[in-house]
Image 1 (cartoon, rainbow, N blue to C red):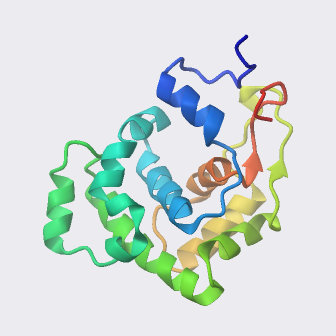
Image 2 (cartoon, rainbow, N blue to C red):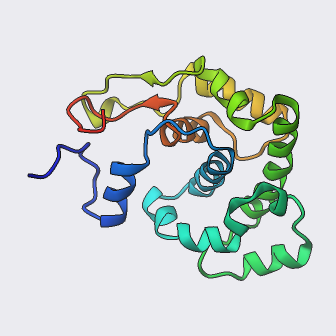
Length: 184
């Protein structure tokens, strides 16, 4: 029997697998947290489906999201990325990724890990929103507002409250699975 899932508006295998195995699972691995930050930034103005279907190309193009490598990207590498049909070729988002890699490394240096820094916005715990319908899923919160302010203060780009909230959902900082979903 099929598990009861949140009613995502797609029967796309990749979307279902992402929902069932990653979305909303508390994440504490710095490299993976950086990956989610990058992907959520590239999602701005687009559908998550678009980004998810390009994820493997993003991993290849962005050196598996290793921030130390990305922080060192040259103009030649940027030009290569902007010509890569496998990713979203947005100059501001590509340059923002490099800037964010540098800011990410500074946060790691200051806090010992990005994980320690980022989870402070939820008190180190997952916020369970007990959502009962898709229309009740928020796009921001006081926590994502605070995260956005702090990230931007530290030099991050593409770190508005809506992007931060999407990141919090992906990283399991908030549980927005519907209460009747098997992942809740």
